Image 1: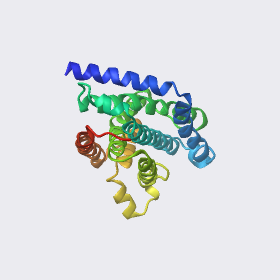
Image 2: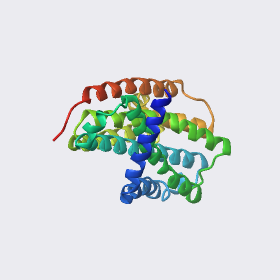
Image 3: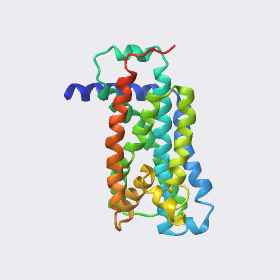
Image 4: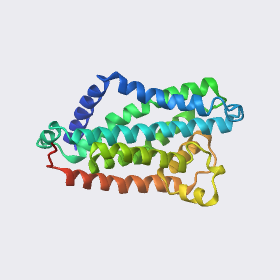
Length: 251
């Protein structure tokens, strides 16, 4: 176990260094979620001026930030890496599939959570969103847990598809999960059938989990059960796809 953890940390470190060397990739990840807050939340006085609604709106965009960065970061990064000559060489090294998958979760996941910071700062300065220190801490923990399905979905796309197909699939999956999961439109505005459907989506489940952690109240049982189920199922799917892809070479 110690060897796997060491290899995971080493691979994650070099993945982060490779990404940091391309500043525009970091700028896009940090700016896009913040612009969404400025365009969709701040101009609406009824939303930005109500502490409860504003807080939930900020939480929704925080979840969207993690969702978008996870899908693009994992899906496209892995799909593009698989088409390079370097990736087949890495597979010849004595590194387990678990270590490589975990290293992607750590490196790209860390950059995804960095995108949350501008949204939190702008939400605190430009809206009536508020929380307590314990609520903020609880929200961070809930977001860490709820982000796992997003990361695993992106990883599965990266190992299942070539880069050209992954771009289209990532965009479709991202906007589908965002709209149907209540990240752009509050779930109480949904039609009954859509509200019921959204309860099965990891985006809605993560949103409810983080809202509960930040604002308190009653936690829907299907939110934490759903996040756990998605995490377990997608972990198996990712490992299967990794093993299926193992040894392949791309031109």
